[in-house]
Length: 86
Length: 516
Image (cartoon, rainbow over all chains, first blue to last red):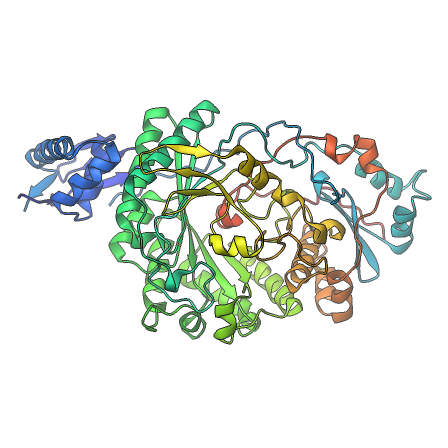
């Protein structure tokens, strides 16, 4: 199973209900919920399976729904350079 | 990481109007006279007014004679007879918690020798995620119905951060619901600080306020607050305090003061401020208990506590930091010392909804039941209206407080440990130190710190303040208002522990009347 970590040079700021990412090239992206929760969990090194189970509770999703959401979100960020696949 | 954005909490919700009446038998008073050396302190907490008068003026106030006519005394009496803008009252009607308390576990990773929360022996059972989510959703729904925006959640324990999954779920569910309903989340925690740097980073990023227990340098802290196997905990707590002190979280360092450490209170305060740059330093005296007695710890002498506590207040103020002794809340009148009676609801790991975060067996031992409802694992939240009303009116029945000028400021202290039902009406050490600290803070607000010095240097004068038998004075104030009981406006509480991140200061002593 692929795990992820924050991309090199990526920084972020936690707002009241958002999270703002900035990569080394200056690209900025504001995450709202549920994506903000997913990024926080990944950024703190939570393994993929744990991110999925916590996201399921946070969003009241079943396991399959949570896994699909987390997987697609992480893949998109990995493609965009905000995350690296481990 | 970029610096997180922080805003000040919004003002408290507007007072609600209700019609509940105080419990019979315990009268509340509006004006008090306290002997201060050769003068008397007049204190009208509901009017946020304090003044110093001489002996003849005090006699006139007490007898009701010679109050009319020109002069400062009649001016003071006129002011004392003005109706207050509001009087704190018990809440009624539908519950809308002032804040939601979440207790992820009663377990703890320390074995504090004075623990009153069952930490060293408590089961490390985590709250069910569904219970946590249901409680958060219920709170959000209540806020929306009440048209309130401040979504305040505070974590208690045990040690909340040994249940990281529950914390993560609650933090993000709160923020998600806040975003959905246009609420403003404020997250707080009371913690022992024994966790990783990564967890501290998370707390600094997501929390607005943290009350961190730190009893001083290692010689005090490690004696009071060892880890489970008796290992010292100071190093990691100190690291956490340093880390949080650099982050945009409102950090309150809370020290438990014993008879051993009371002489070092100013030194501990200075060391904390220089080492960790907290927003506030909270100084609380040891609560007597079986574990504390077994460890050979004793409550501080109340007179020494008052002297050193005021010393710490002054020192902290000079260093730009706020010192706090929770029982001496002179900024505004209140009915309850703590969340009890304010509709704050604490969710226990097993889903009880309670007005108090202490152990249920401790309430029961004093004839109290603080449970007001339940959160079931299927997500249902139920409130027992009778139990809620019982919690709302509990702060009113305090016979010991009837004669004390701190009845609207200390409000009787802990309902379980200080003024449980049936307690003696004699002042305790807690009462004496609270009376002295409160009097000195009022003197400070009146610009009379030299008088406070004189008082604290004179043991007999301190005893007169600490043990004065009857403070209330009836000058027809309540009749002029139509009676305290008829002035109805409920005051919501501020924060759990009344600690770090209080609202902007305003002085209670708006009237400076030097009549001596």
